Image (cartoon, rainbow, N blue to C red; front, side):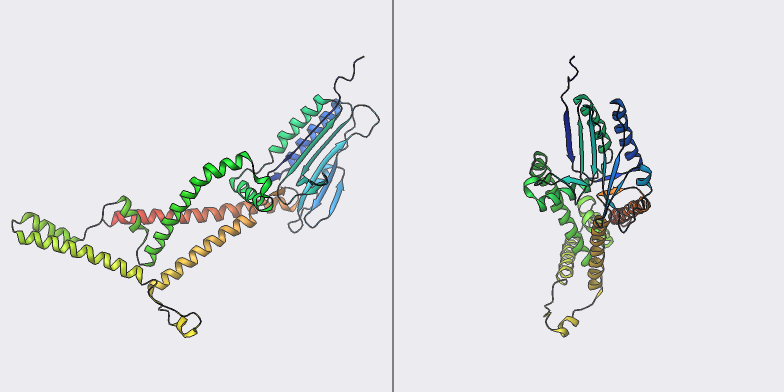
Length: 360
């Protein structure tokens, strides 16, 4: 008899991604593993190893115990190992291990809790066909827990670059920094130019409509010049035409002088910041008030964005117990903040573009 056609196989892999594990994900993983154990006529007795944020570890025997955990916001679950293996003396064997929030230590090859989202999957079987099929089915379920937001990927790439530059080097990252990064850099430089230009315009008493009207709209002409132009056009007197050209030139020069003086006044004072009386002598005018207001808005927008990135993008989420409701609150808060920032930004630009149309 040639009963040992397959000599066994081990399939394993580590996935580098933020994740959110739901009850249905765990249930489906258990269904797949249990089905393979029944296929080999083995007893199915899974084990759940739970690790908390403060370092405690607990071992559970049933999924009901896992789903009934409190999983508090103060001390949430940060790691979960679902494992099952047969300990019988038969030649056939199967071992499955799905580890959320763990990675292999490169020095000892032991599982350690990861700082960011990582998932380890390992399947061993005496039947290589069962091993491959089980691994493929479990891998599909693991991938369904991914959080694939571009912000997650960017933060993870920056974290890798900061902690271990050698592991950051890959074909994808090289292509990104040689093709996408220059395009992004040009966009950021252009955006910075627009922001600085708009900031100076606002500080000098103008608004964004000045910048956009120069690019997309015809320049608004003073009514007095329009009247003078009509008079010069209808009159056959040379002196009327000369007067029109003189007034036009004088108006243009005066406008440029006013813009220059307004912009110059922003930096046209010398302050000794070691002298308290000099600091108090800074002229507080409408220009200073606008600068202060703009500075507060910019700082508030940056602070709000940093807060959102730092607190509203968890990389290891287990939707069990209290944290399930807490995560929904995080998503609502994150969406509300980004919607507020984007709507404020684009509505401000839209208003400043549309306003000149009513002034023509």
